[in-house]
Each structure stands twice: as C-alpha cells, then as structure tokens.
Amino acid sequence: MKVIAIAAGGTSGHIQPAITTAQQIKESKKEVKVFFIGTSKGLEQEIIPAKGFDLNLIPAVPLPRSINLRTLFFPFSLISAVSIARKILKNKDVDCVIGFGAYISMPVYLAAFIEKIPIIIHEGNRKAGFANKFGALFTKHIFQMFSGSLKNAKTIGMPVRKELIDLDKSILKSTALSFFDLAKDKKTLFIFGGSQGASKINDLIYELIPNLVKNNIQILHSIGKRNQLRDDLKSIEMYHPISYIEKMEYAYAAADLVISRAGAMTIAEQTVAGIPAIYIPFAVGNGEQIHNVKDLISADAGVLVEEKELNKDKLEKLIVSLISDDSKLQKMSNNAKSFAQTNAAQILADKAIELVK
Image 1 (cartoon, rainbow, N blue to C red):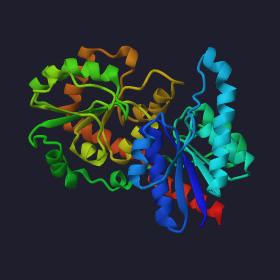
Image 2 (image 1 turned 30 degrees about the vertical axis):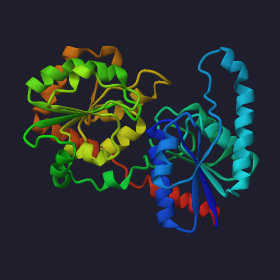
Image 3 (image 1 turned 90 degrees about the horizontal axis):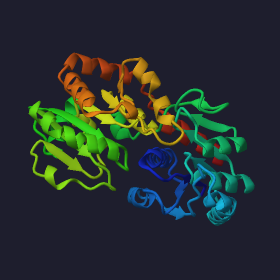
Image 4 (image 1 turned 30 degrees about the horizontal axis):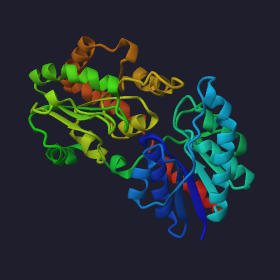
C-alpha cells in the first residue's frame, strides 16, 4: 500500500485544509494510507486524531524572529527535528509528503528531500511564509491560494471542507439558528478570531455587547479555547459565547454578518459560503493577513478595519449600518462568491496519487 505523509500543525488554519486534502485522497483512492506529522504545541493533537488519522509528533522548531538565545540553539533543534522526521518517513515507508507551511513543515521538507521522497507544497497566504519558500527549493510540485505567492506555483485556491462548498444558507439557516439557540426574528452577528480566538477583538466586542443588543442584534461569539468568558456577560440573553465551533457551516448559515481575522482559510471559507464580513487582519507576523484580503476589499466583498484603527465607536457604527442594510449584505455576499475556488483539495489529491503510482 502506498503511503502519504501530511505535515500540518499549529492553528486550525493550517490543519483544516490538510484534513480536507487527506479526506479527498482517501475518497479518491481508498488503498492509499494517509497519516500526519505534527508537534505537541498546536491544535493537531486534538483535531487530527478526532478525524480518524494517525498523528506522529516531532519537536516544534519555530523560526526565531529576532536574535536571542533561541537563535543560537535553532540549528541544533532543526537537526534534531529533521532526524526524527527522517525516522518516521523511513519507518512508515512514505512515498509522498504534502506540506501546508508553518514551522512543522521545514524539518519534514528537509527530511523528505534527504530521503528522496517527492514533496507537494501548498501555500495559503498571499505573502508566503519562510517554511514554504524554503521547501519550494526542493520540489516543482508547488500550489498556492493566491497568484504570486511563490515562484512557479499553480494557483488553485484553498482546500475547503465540503460542508461549506455545499452550504445553502436558505435551507440550513433555521436549523442553524436552533442549533445555537438563536432567535429567528433577530439579525445575527457572528464573531470569531480563528481557532485561538483574538483577545483584542474579544475585548472590544465585550464593550459593544450592550449597545448591539439594544439595536436588536444577537451575537454568536467564538471566543477561542484559550480565552475565558467574563462573568458579567454570562447572563445576557442575546449574547451566545462558545469557546470553539466545530460546525462552522452552521455558524455561517446562522450569520447575517461576520467579524473575523483575515487568515487564508477564513477567507477561503467565507468566499465559498458567500459571507459578508468585516475583516480585522492580525497585525503580527509577516503581515500576510492584510495582503490576503486586499482583493476582496477592492471588489466590495468585505470591509477592512485595520487593528491600529480599531475603536469602539467606529466598529459599532459599522456593524449597525451593515447588518441593517439587506441589499448591501446581499451585494457583499454575491461579490464574495465570485472569488470562490472549490476544487483545490481534488487537485492536491490527484497530484499526490499521481506521484505515488
């Protein structure tokens, strides 16, 4: 039996497209074995086994962003992680490796190159991260969500779970509202900051809740697993906080308007589902999120609020004006759908199956 290893870890934004790709590989060719390589530092230990895939762990080797003591130890940490990854690839008799970036990928790319195993890379962000830039030196099988992220890459979009590709809000909305115990006669604002939450957005929303409720807006809020809900908000009837939402198709179906970060997976899912959104890009890292969302904003498929411009009054006015304007929301939804790409998982699966034949 042929074996494919997928390197993915950290946040849901890296893990979920990898799982979608793995599921597509199994659906396309059942006699291929797929397993994952991750670390103990991210969400992969929780998410991946729950989806029925084996997970093998290697040490996390984050790339230092400044010169410090960790910088001195980085080469030794990387060598150790590559050595462990090589053992996994050899013991599992791996025929192909697929990587989705982030710090988990670099040692796996190196291990695969040393073992002469074909590598497939998928880059989700418009501004590619170092791991995938590095990995692209060792393969010609390079794919990207946004045109121009990596040289010689094929633009295919992002692998998006089928539940969102098949989402029909008009059919699912009533069920979704009931699922979250939301009223059917009120507008719904859905807020999330990715799998880790977003404390800055959360803190601002907490201040806005009383005024939003006064405007008859109910709030579905994914606060993130690492964040604690304030006690004084637990009794507000129209405020529905949840630590992590597994059924995102229900959340999107329930929502009239979304506030989110601008990670690549978030954008891919919201364009496929036709979601009108206010995007607040994460201001840390290599600045990829603001680049991710530029085209959507230009096409009136979303509204951009930069974190440095974020304040209570501005965000409240924007939410109230948008959520009360049905024609504007519909226009944003239609424009968002024009960016949707739905066959990325199939393309990656087909390439992997071709390489292991």
